[in-house]
Amino acid sequence: MSEKSSSSGSDEDVDPESGQPVELGGVLSKWTNYIHGWQDRWVVLKNNTLSYYKSQDEREYGCRGSLCLSKAVITPHEFDECRFDISMNDSVWYLRAEDPEHRLQWIESIELHKAESGYGSETSLRRHGSMLSLTSAASALSSTSTSSFKKGHRLREKLAEMETFRDILCRQVDILQKYFDSCADGVSKDEFQRDKVVEEDEEEFPTSTRSDEHNQNNNGSKEKLFSPASPKVINGIDFKGEAITFKATTAGILSTLSHCIELMVKREDSWQKRLDKELEKRRRVEDAYKSAMNELKKKSHYGGPDYEEGPNSLINEDEFFDAVEAALDRQDKIEEQCQSEKVRTHHLAQVPSSDVFSTISMHRFATKSCSHSPSLSSAELFSASDDVHRFSTQVEEMVQNHMTYSLQDMGGDANWQLVIEEGEMKVYRREVEENGIVLDPLKATHAVKGVTGHEVCHYFWDTDFRMDWETTIENFNVVEKLSENASIVYQTHKRVWPASQRDVLYLSAIRKIVATNENDPDTWLVCNFSVEHDNAPPTNRCVRAKINVAMICQTLVSPPEGNKEISRDNILCKITYVANVNPGGWAPASVLRAVAKREYPKFLKRFTSYVQEKTVGKPILF
Image (cartoon, rainbow, N blue to C red; front, side):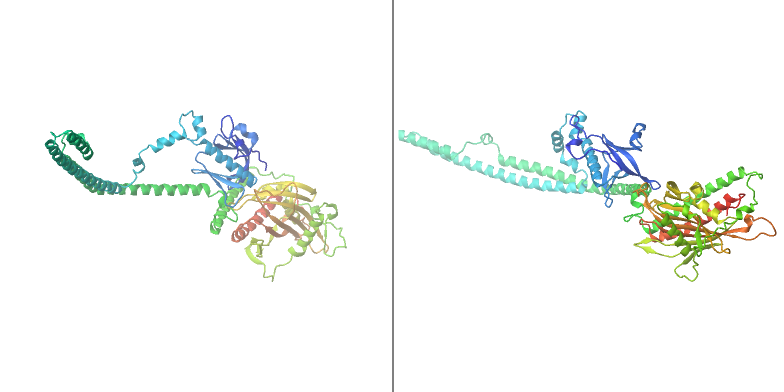
């Protein structure tokens, strides 16, 4: 995965002229849905908006989706070091970077765009041409009345505050009253002393100059003894009376305030009841809203990557099993509809009876090859010397192993369990686990009338017919053709959510094994086993499964009556199908076994029915 993006979290991410964060673009993997999983998308971060395109070349056609980052929440994943989620209300984008460094780079760039785009930031104020500054905004905030932030307090708390203020006012009035009383007493004493000194001065006034000096000294003493009286004292204001009046006035005010408080307390009960009713209504509405939002989030996110197969999946084993069953049921319905459509189309276009293929086969197709090599004790590989390539040794080893072990009778082997028996078809399983991964070998036997082993193996091996009968494959391609009878194939299977999507890279070879004993039938075999190839490396989109599969077929011919030629009524194909699959991943063992038990018999019946339909009216191919 390639990714083109500039570094973030530094001064280089900000345009020096506009002061805005620079545009960021690159390739990220985006979770599309539970069917297609992770897909590479071209993602652009610009002007506080995150947009994505299918590819960089398709930007001119418009984005496929965008997300405003003003109130978005960016969450790095707890376990996946390359993944981060961006949520905005009910919308969630699941994104994966190429590596943890690129993830950090994207997160820092997105956070920078958010910080520089919010209303009230310095760049946003400049951008909108506002003369406001952060200082003026703070001062305006500080000048707001604190009561506006307390209007949510209960009325009883407010009344308690008023009572507290009343007590404080009462204490202050008492202090003031004491002060006024002391002032009034002090004035009365000063007036008494002044009158007494004046009378003494008048008696000594006619004396000598020494007396005048003494008089001046006495006058100085008077000035020192009596400070100048205030105008109120000079005007003869009655301080004590004023204090009594002030006390009475404040007492009236306090009495009125107390009366108001009593009335408010009485009214609070009725207000509280009405408030309780409104709060209860609000609570019910909020609960309903939260419930609806949770359901919506569950529906929208249940197909998200957190619920898919993995070591930290949020889905438990029972829910995993139910989800897989539901997905398989949907696939079965789609398959039934397709089959019904094919049958209807087939009836509309019936092949004329004068077709070149006759229902009666030519006897020459039943002729067997008579060139046997005495060097092999039981069987020889038909034209194996002509099928030479770099994997020839592995192919021959696989063929020999399957001929030695796969055809063995399972009678008396307690390790094999019969899990399915439907008519001629029997499916056996041997439970094997390695490091918690289910590796159960499966073996199925079947008998199909009217087809030969060559025909069955031909349709099983030839990729030209693969998509006609294989309904579990999403796409496939031949990576390399090794020879006329061997090729390397890469295929991806349809995803069954919540299981991860699987892919497989395998070598497929077809062989005819001629029996040395004339009484034994010849054997046709197709073996598919996993290999590695530079042109199909593993990807993070799929879990690479490992397989070792063989389709082994033998044709039994019952002689026709008289001199009649052999027809399809006289042939029977015995099929042995063995599969050793390592699915990889973290799917629960119970789910894997249940799926195998359900799907393998369906696959075998579907395939053999397809071969019977394809060979109707055609010459027999031995």
